[in-house]
Image (cartoon, rainbow, N blue to C red; front, side):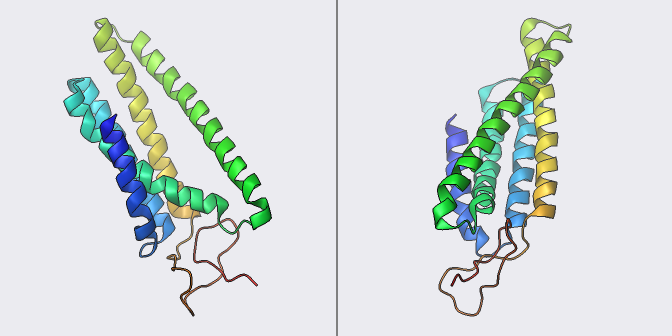
Length: 182
């Protein structure tokens, strides 16, 4: 799991800097695409060899995409929430994340179980087939999420707070430049 930890740290570290130069929709989209590429890498590596050496680069790429996306999506969820409602906004974000992870796990475990039981090979080969199928579905979901992020998030580049004349109001619920509050 070291590659996943490293990728997450790198992605989450780069995201705030990228958001000052690149629109949030592009950062989240790139993150989703990177995660999908990593899932496909592991799907084919699992089917081909199943060795950790072949899986580690895919884990790194998935985590890099995750690190980029999670920062942008968290910002989109809690951006412009009044201070007295920040706790509620954060709680809703955490609940949505927990439910999403649980539902995703159920779907992908079901796909893996179906693929495993449908394989006529040796037990290890059957597991590899099932996991590869689940990772392909995962990659499809990640690509759909990347497209949704490209369509739904703001196309305005964030500006550092305190810069005069560059901040413009963002629409509620979108990630964009910080509007001045009076």
